[in-house]
Length: 231
Ligand SMILES: Cc1cc2nc3c(=O)[nH]c(=O)nc-3n(C[C@H](O)[C@H](O)[C@H](O)COP(=O)(O)OP(=O)(O)OC[C@H]3O[C@@H](n4cnc5c(N)ncnc54)[C@H](O)[C@@H]3O)c2cc1C
Image (tube, rainbow, N blue to C red; front, top):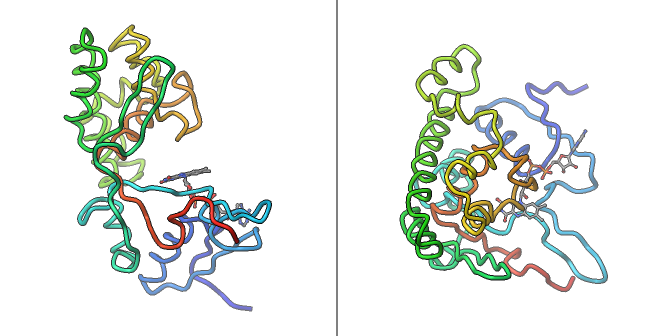
C-alpha cells in the first residue's frame, strides 16, 4: 500500500492547484477523481460531433504580480500558459431590453460609464463604490490573515464593513444605494457568474465578481480559445 502525505479529492482547477502546491512543498500527494478524466469544469464536453468548452473562458487578475498570477507563479505555471488581454473597452456586453452596459477595464472608467447611463444616480453610484472599496480591502486582508478562527475576530473588528454586510444579501446593498431599477439591474449584471439572484447572493460575492473583472480580464488561449470546435 502506498502512503501519501496529502490526498486531494477532485481534480478540478482548485484540486489540481492545491495538489501542485503541496507537491512543490515536497510532500507526496494523490489526486482522486470520480470522473473518467481529470480537469473538472476545465474539461470539454462532447455532443453531436462537437467539443464544447463549458468552463473557464476568461480569467481576471492575471497581469504579472496580480493575485491569480501569483498563484500560477507559485505552482510553476506562470510562464507555461499564454494569456491574451481582452479588449479593455468591452470585456463583456450586457444587453438589456432598453439599455446596454459595456464591462470595461478599470473601476473609475466603469463608474463613469454607470454615471453616464443613469445620470441622476451619481450619489448612489459613489456610495456603492465606497462600500466596494472597503469590502475589497477587507477581503484582500482576509487572504493575508487566512481563515484561522483565532484571527477572524480581530479581522472583523478592523473591518466593521464586514460586520454590517457579511450576512446580508447583495440586494440589501443595492436598495441602500439606489431605487433606480436600471442601476440596480446594471450593478447585478454578472449574477449568472454566481448563479444566484441578488436576493440570495452575498454582498462580498457581488462586489468581488465585479472586482475580478474590473481589474482587467485576460483570456486564456491554447486550444481552448475556440468555444466550439469540431472534434
Ligand atoms: C459554463 C461555465 C462557464 C464558466 N466560465 C468561467 C470563466 O469564464 N472564468 C472563470 O474564472 N470561471 C468560469 N467558470 C467557473 C469555473 O469553471 C469553476 O469555478 C472552476 O472550474 C471550478 O473548479 P473546481 O476545482 O472548484 O471544481 P470542478 O472543476 O467542478 O472540479 C471538481 C472535481 O471534483 C470531482 N469530484 C467531485 N466529487 C468527487 C468525489 N467524491 N470523489 C472524487 N472526485 C470528485 C469532480 O468530478 C470534478 O472533476 C465557469 C463555469 C461554468 C459551468
